[in-house]
Image (tube, rainbow, N blue to C red; front, side):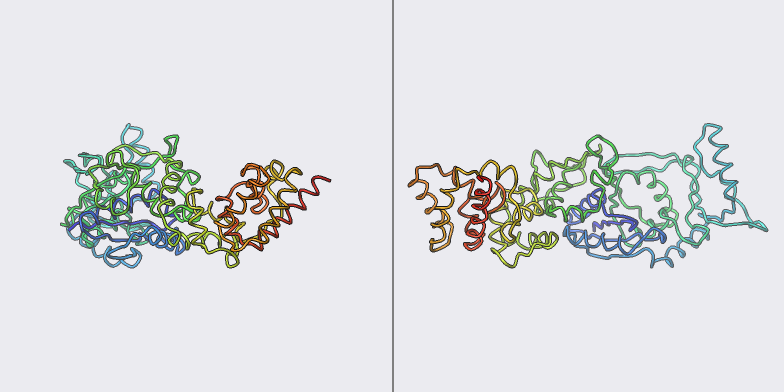
Length: 468
Protein backbone atom coordinates (compact mmCIF):
# COMPACT_ATOMS: atom_id res chain seq x y z
CA UNK A 1 0.00 0.00 0.00
CA UNK A 2 1.11 3.57 -0.75
CA UNK A 3 1.83 5.39 2.51
CA UNK A 4 3.08 8.98 2.45
CA UNK A 5 3.78 11.41 5.25
CA UNK A 6 4.07 15.11 5.94
CA UNK A 7 6.64 15.74 8.65
CA UNK A 8 7.04 19.45 9.48
CA UNK A 9 9.22 20.84 12.26
CA UNK A 10 7.27 23.18 14.57
CA UNK A 11 10.04 25.77 14.72
CA UNK A 12 8.30 28.52 12.75
CA UNK A 13 5.40 29.25 10.44
CA UNK A 14 3.96 26.72 8.00
CA UNK A 15 4.71 28.48 4.71
CA UNK A 16 3.64 27.66 1.16
CA UNK A 17 6.71 25.53 0.44
CA UNK A 18 5.73 23.19 3.26
CA UNK A 19 2.08 23.29 2.23
CA UNK A 20 2.96 22.27 -1.34
CA UNK A 21 4.96 19.33 0.03
CA UNK A 22 1.96 18.32 2.14
CA UNK A 23 -0.32 18.72 -0.88
CA UNK A 24 1.81 16.55 -3.17
CA UNK A 25 2.11 13.88 -0.45
CA UNK A 26 -1.64 13.97 0.26
CA UNK A 27 -2.60 13.89 -3.43
CA UNK A 28 -0.26 10.99 -4.18
CA UNK A 29 -1.73 8.95 -1.34
CA UNK A 30 -5.32 9.76 -2.30
CA UNK A 31 -4.66 9.10 -6.02
CA UNK A 32 -3.44 5.59 -5.19
CA UNK A 33 -6.08 4.93 -2.48
CA UNK A 34 -3.23 4.95 0.01
CA UNK A 35 -2.73 6.47 3.44
CA UNK A 36 -1.43 9.88 4.51
CA UNK A 37 0.35 10.27 7.85
CA UNK A 38 1.11 13.46 9.79
CA UNK A 39 4.23 13.51 11.92
CA UNK A 40 5.46 16.48 13.97
CA UNK A 41 9.26 16.47 14.12
CA UNK A 42 9.67 18.32 17.39
CA UNK A 43 12.98 16.94 18.66
CA UNK A 44 14.51 20.43 18.60
CA UNK A 45 13.21 21.25 22.07
CA UNK A 46 14.60 24.80 22.21
CA UNK A 47 13.10 25.96 18.91
CA UNK A 48 9.87 23.94 18.85
CA UNK A 49 6.72 25.56 20.24
CA UNK A 50 3.10 24.68 20.83
CA UNK A 51 2.12 27.82 18.91
CA UNK A 52 3.91 26.52 15.81
CA UNK A 53 2.25 23.11 16.26
CA UNK A 54 -1.16 24.81 16.41
CA UNK A 55 -0.40 26.72 13.21
CA UNK A 56 0.44 23.45 11.46
CA UNK A 57 -2.73 21.73 12.68
CA UNK A 58 -4.95 24.75 11.95
CA UNK A 59 -3.43 25.15 8.51
CA UNK A 60 -3.95 21.48 7.68
CA UNK A 61 -7.56 21.68 8.81
CA UNK A 62 -8.23 24.88 6.84
CA UNK A 63 -6.81 23.34 3.66
CA UNK A 64 -8.82 20.14 4.12
CA UNK A 65 -5.92 17.70 4.48
CA UNK A 66 -7.52 14.76 6.25
CA UNK A 67 -4.97 12.40 7.79
CA UNK A 68 -5.26 8.65 8.18
CA UNK A 69 -2.81 8.44 11.08
CA UNK A 70 -1.33 10.99 13.46
CA UNK A 71 -0.28 13.47 14.37
CA UNK A 72 2.68 11.57 15.80
CA UNK A 73 5.21 13.54 17.86
CA UNK A 74 8.88 12.64 17.72
CA UNK A 75 9.37 14.06 21.21
CA UNK A 76 7.38 11.13 22.61
CA UNK A 77 9.24 8.46 20.64
CA UNK A 78 12.70 8.72 22.23
CA UNK A 79 12.70 5.10 23.47
CA UNK A 80 12.41 3.84 19.90
CA UNK A 81 15.36 5.95 18.79
CA UNK A 82 17.50 4.80 21.71
CA UNK A 83 16.62 1.17 20.94
CA UNK A 84 17.67 1.60 17.29
CA UNK A 85 20.96 3.23 18.31
CA UNK A 86 21.70 0.34 20.66
CA UNK A 87 21.09 -2.07 17.78
CA UNK A 88 23.46 -0.11 15.53
CA UNK A 89 26.15 -0.20 18.23
CA UNK A 90 25.72 -3.92 18.78
CA UNK A 91 25.95 -4.72 15.07
CA UNK A 92 29.06 -2.56 14.63
CA UNK A 93 27.26 0.05 12.53
CA UNK A 94 27.79 2.87 15.04
CA UNK A 95 30.48 3.92 17.48
CA UNK A 96 31.24 6.38 20.28
CA UNK A 97 33.17 9.49 19.33
CA UNK A 98 35.08 11.46 21.98
CA UNK A 99 36.63 14.16 19.77
CA UNK A 100 36.59 17.67 21.19
CA UNK A 101 35.43 20.75 19.33
CA UNK A 102 39.04 21.85 18.84
CA UNK A 103 39.94 18.48 17.33
CA UNK A 104 36.99 18.66 14.95
CA UNK A 105 37.94 22.20 13.90
CA UNK A 106 41.49 21.03 13.19
CA UNK A 107 40.16 18.16 11.06
CA UNK A 108 38.09 20.54 8.96
CA UNK A 109 40.95 23.00 8.48
CA UNK A 110 43.37 20.23 7.49
CA UNK A 111 40.94 18.76 4.97
CA UNK A 112 40.23 22.16 3.44
CA UNK A 113 43.95 22.91 3.23
CA UNK A 114 44.30 19.74 1.15
CA UNK A 115 41.42 20.84 -1.06
CA UNK A 116 39.19 18.12 0.30
CA UNK A 117 35.62 18.21 1.58
CA UNK A 118 35.64 19.13 5.31
CA UNK A 119 34.33 16.11 7.17
CA UNK A 120 35.02 13.89 10.15
CA UNK A 121 38.15 11.83 9.50
CA UNK A 122 37.06 8.71 11.44
CA UNK A 123 39.52 9.13 14.32
CA UNK A 124 37.31 7.19 16.75
CA UNK A 125 35.86 4.83 14.14
CA UNK A 126 37.92 1.80 15.17
CA UNK A 127 38.63 2.81 18.77
CA UNK A 128 38.24 -0.15 21.15
CA UNK A 129 38.30 1.64 24.51
CA UNK A 130 37.06 4.98 25.77
CA UNK A 131 39.66 7.54 26.87
CA UNK A 132 40.26 8.08 30.59
CA UNK A 133 38.99 11.66 30.35
CA UNK A 134 36.69 13.31 27.85
CA UNK A 135 34.50 16.41 27.82
CA UNK A 136 31.70 15.00 25.74
CA UNK A 137 30.68 11.90 23.85
CA UNK A 138 28.48 11.42 20.80
CA UNK A 139 27.50 8.39 18.74
CA UNK A 140 28.31 8.35 15.03
CA UNK A 141 26.94 6.13 12.29
CA UNK A 142 29.62 4.03 10.58
CA UNK A 143 29.05 4.97 6.95
CA UNK A 144 30.34 2.44 4.37
CA UNK A 145 33.70 3.66 3.09
CA UNK A 146 33.59 2.02 -0.33
CA UNK A 147 31.14 1.75 -3.19
CA UNK A 148 28.30 4.14 -3.83
CA UNK A 149 24.77 4.84 -2.69
CA UNK A 150 22.22 5.26 -5.46
CA UNK A 151 19.03 7.30 -5.03
CA UNK A 152 16.42 6.36 -7.62
CA UNK A 153 14.36 9.48 -7.28
CA UNK A 154 10.95 9.68 -8.94
CA UNK A 155 11.52 13.34 -9.83
CA UNK A 156 15.28 13.88 -9.93
CA UNK A 157 16.06 10.55 -11.59
CA UNK A 158 19.07 8.45 -10.62
CA UNK A 159 21.48 10.29 -8.32
CA UNK A 160 24.75 8.59 -7.32
CA UNK A 161 26.86 9.32 -4.25
CA UNK A 162 30.34 7.97 -3.54
CA UNK A 163 30.28 6.60 0.00
CA UNK A 164 33.81 7.90 0.49
CA UNK A 165 32.38 11.42 0.19
CA UNK A 166 29.90 10.83 3.01
CA UNK A 167 31.05 11.39 6.59
CA UNK A 168 30.24 9.39 9.71
CA UNK A 169 27.32 11.52 10.79
CA UNK A 170 26.31 12.01 14.41
CA UNK A 171 23.14 10.07 15.28
CA UNK A 172 23.10 10.81 19.04
CA UNK A 173 24.20 14.17 20.44
CA UNK A 174 26.24 14.61 23.60
CA UNK A 175 23.06 15.59 25.48
CA UNK A 176 21.51 12.22 24.63
CA UNK A 177 19.09 13.46 21.96
CA UNK A 178 18.87 11.77 18.55
CA UNK A 179 19.60 13.74 15.40
CA UNK A 180 17.25 14.32 12.48
CA UNK A 181 18.83 11.78 10.14
CA UNK A 182 18.45 9.00 12.71
CA UNK A 183 14.94 9.76 13.97
CA UNK A 184 13.47 10.28 10.51
CA UNK A 185 14.73 6.86 9.39
CA UNK A 186 13.32 5.10 12.45
CA UNK A 187 9.95 6.82 12.01
CA UNK A 188 9.71 6.15 8.28
CA UNK A 189 10.65 2.51 8.82
CA UNK A 190 8.26 1.88 11.69
CA UNK A 191 5.39 3.79 10.07
CA UNK A 192 5.99 1.81 6.87
CA UNK A 193 6.26 4.92 4.72
CA UNK A 194 6.45 3.74 1.11
CA UNK A 195 7.10 7.14 -0.50
CA UNK A 196 9.00 10.07 0.99
CA UNK A 197 7.99 13.25 -0.83
CA UNK A 198 9.91 16.33 0.30
CA UNK A 199 11.87 19.38 -0.86
CA UNK A 200 15.06 18.81 -2.83
CA UNK A 201 17.02 20.63 -0.12
CA UNK A 202 16.85 17.23 1.65
CA UNK A 203 18.37 15.32 -1.29
CA UNK A 204 21.88 15.30 0.21
CA UNK A 205 20.50 13.72 3.40
CA UNK A 206 19.02 10.83 1.44
CA UNK A 207 22.14 8.67 0.86
CA UNK A 208 22.97 8.94 4.57
CA UNK A 209 19.46 7.87 5.49
CA UNK A 210 19.48 5.01 2.98
CA UNK A 211 22.65 3.64 4.59
CA UNK A 212 20.98 3.74 8.01
CA UNK A 213 17.92 1.91 6.61
CA UNK A 214 20.19 -0.79 5.22
CA UNK A 215 22.19 -1.09 8.46
CA UNK A 216 18.94 -1.66 10.36
CA UNK A 217 17.68 -4.19 7.82
CA UNK A 218 14.67 -1.97 7.09
CA UNK A 219 12.94 -1.40 3.75
CA UNK A 220 14.15 1.73 2.00
CA UNK A 221 11.24 3.92 0.85
CA UNK A 222 10.96 5.42 -2.62
CA UNK A 223 12.03 9.06 -2.71
CA UNK A 224 10.66 12.03 -4.64
CA UNK A 225 12.42 15.35 -4.09
CA UNK A 226 10.41 18.38 -5.16
CA UNK A 227 12.25 21.47 -6.48
CA UNK A 228 12.06 24.52 -4.25
CA UNK A 229 9.73 27.44 -4.85
CA UNK A 230 11.46 30.69 -5.84
CA UNK A 231 10.31 34.30 -5.81
CA UNK A 232 9.61 36.28 -8.99
CA UNK A 233 13.32 37.09 -9.31
CA UNK A 234 14.43 33.47 -9.06
CA UNK A 235 15.69 33.80 -5.51
CA UNK A 236 14.82 31.86 -2.37
CA UNK A 237 11.46 32.85 -0.91
CA UNK A 238 11.44 35.48 1.80
CA UNK A 239 8.51 36.06 4.17
CA UNK A 240 7.53 39.08 2.11
CA UNK A 241 7.25 36.92 -1.01
CA UNK A 242 5.30 33.99 0.35
CA UNK A 243 7.19 32.22 3.10
CA UNK A 244 4.89 33.67 5.75
CA UNK A 245 2.35 31.51 7.56
CA UNK A 246 -0.21 29.80 5.36
CA UNK A 247 -2.89 31.18 7.70
CA UNK A 248 -1.95 34.66 6.47
CA UNK A 249 -3.54 33.71 3.16
CA UNK A 250 -6.71 32.88 5.05
CA UNK A 251 -6.65 36.27 6.77
CA UNK A 252 -6.11 37.91 3.38
CA UNK A 253 -9.33 36.37 2.11
CA UNK A 254 -7.91 33.65 -0.13
CA UNK A 255 -10.04 30.53 -0.49
CA UNK A 256 -8.32 27.26 0.50
CA UNK A 257 -9.30 25.59 -2.79
CA UNK A 258 -7.76 28.46 -4.76
CA UNK A 259 -4.52 28.24 -2.79
CA UNK A 260 -4.31 24.47 -3.35
CA UNK A 261 -5.01 24.92 -7.07
CA UNK A 262 -2.27 27.56 -7.20
CA UNK A 263 0.26 25.38 -5.36
CA UNK A 264 -0.41 22.24 -7.38
CA UNK A 265 0.48 24.19 -10.52
CA UNK A 266 3.84 25.22 -9.05
CA UNK A 267 5.85 22.44 -10.62
CA UNK A 268 3.04 20.15 -11.86
CA UNK A 269 0.81 20.43 -14.90
CA UNK A 270 -1.84 18.59 -16.87
CA UNK A 271 -1.91 19.93 -20.40
CA UNK A 272 -2.95 23.57 -20.53
CA UNK A 273 -5.57 23.26 -17.78
CA UNK A 274 -5.30 25.94 -15.09
CA UNK A 275 -8.34 25.46 -12.85
CA UNK A 276 -8.66 22.12 -11.05
CA UNK A 277 -11.23 20.99 -8.54
CA UNK A 278 -9.87 18.97 -5.62
CA UNK A 279 -11.43 15.86 -7.14
CA UNK A 280 -9.62 16.52 -10.43
CA UNK A 281 -6.32 17.02 -8.61
CA UNK A 282 -6.70 13.65 -6.87
CA UNK A 283 -7.65 11.94 -10.13
CA UNK A 284 -4.90 13.45 -12.29
CA UNK A 285 -1.93 14.02 -9.99
CA UNK A 286 1.15 11.87 -10.39
CA UNK A 287 4.75 12.44 -9.35
CA UNK A 288 5.94 11.53 -12.85
CA UNK A 289 4.49 14.84 -14.05
CA UNK A 290 6.32 17.01 -11.52
CA UNK A 291 8.95 19.24 -13.11
CA UNK A 292 12.62 18.89 -12.14
CA UNK A 293 13.29 22.62 -12.20
CA UNK A 294 12.24 25.11 -9.54
CA UNK A 295 8.94 26.97 -9.91
CA UNK A 296 8.59 30.70 -9.33
CA UNK A 297 5.65 32.21 -7.49
CA UNK A 298 3.13 34.33 -9.35
CA UNK A 299 0.89 36.28 -6.93
CA UNK A 300 -1.26 37.55 -9.81
CA UNK A 301 -2.09 33.96 -10.77
CA UNK A 302 -3.21 33.20 -7.21
CA UNK A 303 -5.55 36.19 -7.19
CA UNK A 304 -6.91 35.25 -10.63
CA UNK A 305 -7.62 31.72 -9.42
CA UNK A 306 -9.27 33.06 -6.30
CA UNK A 307 -11.61 35.14 -8.46
CA UNK A 308 -12.57 32.07 -10.50
CA UNK A 309 -13.52 30.17 -7.35
CA UNK A 310 -15.40 33.13 -5.87
CA UNK A 311 -17.55 33.47 -8.98
CA UNK A 312 -18.56 29.82 -8.83
CA UNK A 313 -19.44 29.72 -5.12
CA UNK A 314 -23.00 30.37 -3.98
CA UNK A 315 -23.84 32.94 -1.35
CA UNK A 316 -24.63 30.31 1.26
CA UNK A 317 -21.11 28.86 0.99
CA UNK A 318 -19.44 32.27 1.07
CA UNK A 319 -21.50 33.73 3.93
CA UNK A 320 -19.50 32.13 6.81
CA UNK A 321 -16.26 33.29 5.19
CA UNK A 322 -17.56 36.83 4.82
CA UNK A 323 -18.78 36.74 8.43
CA UNK A 324 -15.27 35.83 9.57
CA UNK A 325 -13.75 38.74 7.66
CA UNK A 326 -16.38 41.19 8.95
CA UNK A 327 -15.64 40.03 12.50
CA UNK A 328 -11.94 40.62 11.89
CA UNK A 329 -12.75 44.17 10.73
CA UNK A 330 -15.10 44.72 13.71
CA UNK A 331 -18.05 45.39 11.39
CA UNK A 332 -21.42 44.71 13.02
CA UNK A 333 -23.38 42.80 10.37
CA UNK A 334 -26.46 42.11 12.53
CA UNK A 335 -28.22 45.31 11.42
CA UNK A 336 -28.43 45.00 7.67
CA UNK A 337 -28.99 42.62 4.74
CA UNK A 338 -28.40 38.89 4.96
CA UNK A 339 -24.79 37.93 4.32
CA UNK A 340 -25.85 35.42 1.66
CA UNK A 341 -27.45 38.20 -0.41
CA UNK A 342 -24.40 40.45 -0.09
CA UNK A 343 -22.15 37.59 -1.19
CA UNK A 344 -24.28 36.95 -4.26
CA UNK A 345 -24.08 40.56 -5.47
CA UNK A 346 -20.41 41.08 -4.58
CA UNK A 347 -18.75 37.79 -5.54
CA UNK A 348 -18.07 38.74 -9.16
CA UNK A 349 -16.89 42.22 -8.24
CA UNK A 350 -14.04 41.37 -5.86
CA UNK A 351 -10.83 39.34 -5.82
CA UNK A 352 -10.80 38.12 -2.22
CA UNK A 353 -13.17 37.64 0.70
CA UNK A 354 -11.32 40.38 2.57
CA UNK A 355 -11.96 42.78 -0.30
CA UNK A 356 -15.61 41.73 -0.26
CA UNK A 357 -15.83 42.62 3.42
CA UNK A 358 -14.17 46.00 2.94
CA UNK A 359 -16.43 46.85 0.00
CA UNK A 360 -19.55 45.77 1.89
CA UNK A 361 -19.06 47.93 4.97
CA UNK A 362 -21.62 50.51 3.81
CA UNK A 363 -24.37 47.85 3.85
CA UNK A 364 -24.03 47.65 7.63
CA UNK A 365 -22.37 50.84 8.88
CA UNK A 366 -22.94 54.52 8.21
CA UNK A 367 -19.93 56.48 7.00
CA UNK A 368 -18.65 59.82 8.27
CA UNK A 369 -17.29 61.25 5.04
CA UNK A 370 -17.76 60.89 1.31
CA UNK A 371 -14.84 59.78 -0.84
CA UNK A 372 -13.15 63.08 -1.87
CA UNK A 373 -12.67 62.18 -5.54
CA UNK A 374 -16.13 60.64 -6.02
CA UNK A 375 -17.93 63.44 -4.17
CA UNK A 376 -16.10 66.19 -6.05
CA UNK A 377 -17.09 64.63 -9.36
CA UNK A 378 -20.68 63.59 -8.61
CA UNK A 379 -22.10 65.52 -5.63
CA UNK A 380 -22.23 68.86 -7.42
CA UNK A 381 -24.75 71.70 -7.10
CA UNK A 382 -26.29 70.80 -10.46
CA UNK A 383 -27.60 67.52 -9.04
CA UNK A 384 -29.10 69.07 -5.89
CA UNK A 385 -32.65 69.53 -7.20
CA UNK A 386 -32.95 66.19 -9.09
CA UNK A 387 -31.52 64.27 -6.12
CA UNK A 388 -33.90 66.02 -3.74
CA UNK A 389 -36.90 65.17 -5.91
CA UNK A 390 -35.73 61.55 -6.30
CA UNK A 391 -35.41 61.26 -2.52
CA UNK A 392 -39.07 62.28 -2.13
CA UNK A 393 -40.13 59.63 -4.63
CA UNK A 394 -38.11 56.96 -2.90
CA UNK A 395 -39.61 57.92 0.45
CA UNK A 396 -43.07 57.15 -0.96
CA UNK A 397 -41.99 53.97 -2.73
CA UNK A 398 -43.70 50.68 -1.81
CA UNK A 399 -42.69 47.91 -1.90
CA UNK A 400 -38.99 48.46 -1.32
CA UNK A 401 -37.31 45.99 -3.67
CA UNK A 402 -34.88 46.19 -6.57
CA UNK A 403 -37.56 46.00 -9.28
CA UNK A 404 -39.64 48.81 -7.78
CA UNK A 405 -36.54 50.93 -7.22
CA UNK A 406 -35.34 50.37 -10.79
CA UNK A 407 -38.74 51.33 -12.23
CA UNK A 408 -38.99 54.42 -10.04
CA UNK A 409 -35.52 55.72 -11.00
CA UNK A 410 -36.04 54.93 -14.70
CA UNK A 411 -39.42 56.73 -14.75
CA UNK A 412 -37.95 59.72 -12.92
CA UNK A 413 -35.10 60.04 -15.44
CA UNK A 414 -37.53 59.88 -18.36
CA UNK A 415 -39.76 62.58 -16.86
CA UNK A 416 -36.97 65.08 -16.34
CA UNK A 417 -35.20 63.96 -19.53
CA UNK A 418 -31.86 63.05 -17.96
CA UNK A 419 -29.68 60.02 -18.64
CA UNK A 420 -29.72 57.26 -16.03
CA UNK A 421 -25.96 57.56 -15.40
CA UNK A 422 -26.30 61.25 -14.54
CA UNK A 423 -28.54 60.27 -11.64
CA UNK A 424 -27.36 56.79 -10.72
CA UNK A 425 -23.75 57.72 -10.00
CA UNK A 426 -24.52 60.70 -7.69
CA UNK A 427 -27.12 58.47 -6.00
CA UNK A 428 -24.49 55.74 -5.56
CA UNK A 429 -21.99 58.14 -3.97
CA UNK A 430 -24.73 59.52 -1.73
CA UNK A 431 -25.75 56.14 -0.30
CA UNK A 432 -22.40 54.27 -0.27
CA UNK A 433 -19.91 57.09 0.28
CA UNK A 434 -17.94 56.15 -2.84
CA UNK A 435 -18.43 55.47 -6.53
CA UNK A 436 -18.28 51.67 -6.46
CA UNK A 437 -21.15 49.28 -5.75
CA UNK A 438 -23.38 46.68 -7.44
CA UNK A 439 -26.23 47.96 -9.66
CA UNK A 440 -27.93 50.93 -8.03
CA UNK A 441 -31.32 49.24 -7.63
CA UNK A 442 -29.79 46.21 -5.85
CA UNK A 443 -27.54 48.46 -3.75
CA UNK A 444 -30.47 50.57 -2.50
CA UNK A 445 -32.61 47.49 -1.86
CA UNK A 446 -29.92 45.90 0.30
CA UNK A 447 -29.02 49.05 2.22
CA UNK A 448 -32.66 49.50 3.21
CA UNK A 449 -35.12 52.34 2.84
CA UNK A 450 -34.51 54.14 6.13
CA UNK A 451 -30.75 54.18 5.66
CA UNK A 452 -31.05 55.31 2.04
CA UNK A 453 -33.24 58.30 2.97
CA UNK A 454 -30.98 59.22 5.87
CA UNK A 455 -27.89 59.13 3.67
CA UNK A 456 -29.59 61.10 0.91
CA UNK A 457 -30.37 63.83 3.44
CA UNK A 458 -26.70 63.87 4.41
CA UNK A 459 -25.64 64.10 0.75
CA UNK A 460 -28.07 66.95 0.07
CA UNK A 461 -26.66 68.87 3.05
CA UNK A 462 -23.15 68.22 1.70
CA UNK A 463 -24.12 69.62 -1.75
CA UNK A 464 -25.81 72.66 -0.20
CA UNK A 465 -22.73 73.39 1.89
CA UNK A 466 -20.59 73.03 -1.20
CA UNK A 467 -22.85 75.44 -3.12
CA UNK A 468 -22.59 78.04 -0.37
